[in-house]
Image (cartoon, rainbow, N blue to C red; front, side):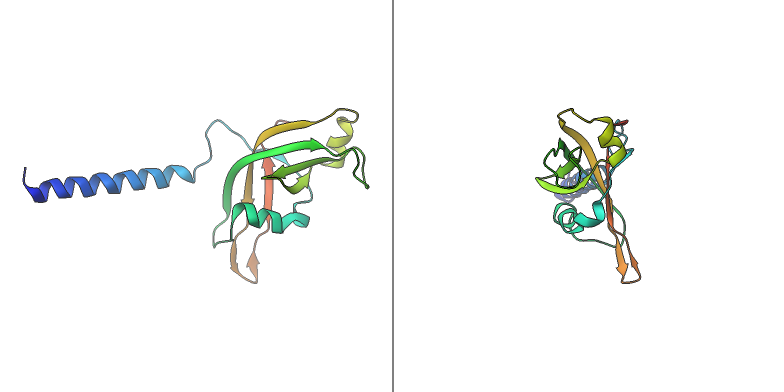
Length: 137
């Protein structure tokens, strides 16, 4: 084998490695379904931006872990159940779902995805949203 053939083989191997790593990183995990919508994300867009990063021309799909926890001292709703990612509040379970869990102490970590968040121009911009991988509350 010549030196040129060895170098070409190495370069092809490196290219395949990086192509494979890149193509798998943006794909959703096959065994997880993000079907549970939370509410109030519009009030926490700055937090979502810190977590998911700057908006780009295409919608984001940022997989992460959410901390879902009771907030019994919430001044607006003692049944409130907050959703945090990386220690930052990103929204809440709906009032209806929180009412179903009244009296329970909720403190769970669940798979989550931050989606949306594109920016093409000031007339074409999407907010971030959050979905959890739980079937219901």
